[in-house]
Amino acid sequence: MSKIKSLVLASALGLTVFNPLSWAAGNFIQLSQQQFDNIGIKIGKLEPASHVPLFIAPAKVVVPPTHDFIVNTSQAGLVVKMNASVGDKVAKGEILGLVNSPDLLTLQSNYLKAVGALKLASATYNRDKTLRKEGVISGRGEQESYSRYNASVIEVNQAKQLLQFAGMTADDVKQLDSTGHLVSQINVRSPIAGRVIERMVVSGTRVDAMAPLYRVANLDELWLEINIPHEHINDIKIGDQVQVENALAEAEIRVIGQSVNPENQTILARAVVKDSQYKDNQASIRVGQKVNIQLIQTTDADTYKLPDAAIAHNEGKTYVFIRDKEGFKVSQITILGKQSDGSVITGEFSGNEDIAINNAAALKAIWLGLGSGE
Image (tube, rainbow, N blue to C red; front, side, top):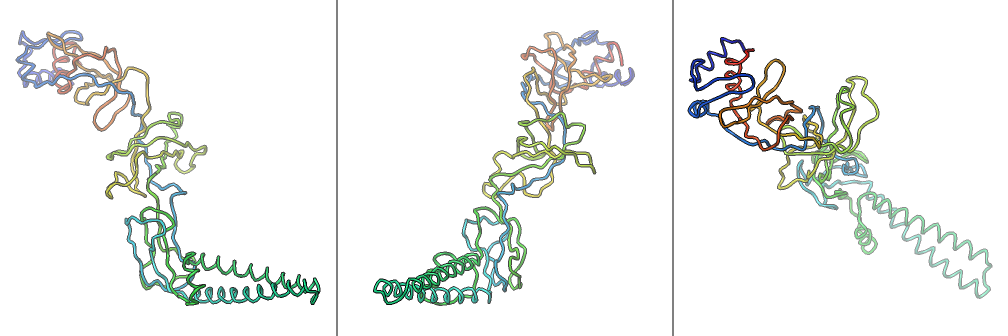
């Protein structure tokens, strides 16, 4: 700021350079109470800060692989009903869709045939065991019956597993055993309790076997995949805190990648989001969302947080103004990091000082206009 601009600003504030009640020399500004009130200066205390914001980097919100599931139909058929929509909360085992499948009829028919063959093989084996004891047949005949019985048991177990793989529950299979009634409808169930993230088809769609219908995820834990710029690779460590911009979400660095992306020279770091569980369908971040994060590190040094309006800049240095009974003392500081609501600083403080927390520009104008100049 030029000498003339400083004088004009001071004059506009009612602090003329000739006013004997206001003057600045060296690193001290003397103000009368009236001038203090005219400028509208507010006084506040230094707010201790144990975390220092470092740099900003892009990130993407993702679901841990163990919490993310694709729900598909095991058999080809016609989708006749879709019960869930994107965003719905679902329970484990809940029916999400219905598929009519001729292949399911074939599987049930094969199962019932295998059960019938097993009953016949069991009866034959039991008869041959009795005949062997009575000496009517040889041991070889009994052994052949036992082999056919074992083969039938294997076929029944295989057919049952295919039915369960197709979506039939153990109770469904028991009902099939007791009634022999075939059904063509596959109940597509949710494998976990979670939320529907994506729906791939609509009712009336013909699908192949293993076609995906839904994506369901457990959102109790979310990750941030962060692209750390190469110039900051050595600035991060496991346990560092991460703050998502414009959101309430916080996270902690758990994994730091060991390879650099050759295209953009970034390293991938993973942070686990704290308290990411959805409450009343409201969440500060969403799966797939691209966000900016700020890395925050803890420090044992004496650091404080101040609003930016309390900080003045001059010739590459930064200053704050400490209240004195006769005015303000100009104190040089170092800015360690910036956040949306202020800056984290360090300097020669006891921690109990009264600081001008606004209008630092006006105090700077007085200081430079009546002091050494800029």
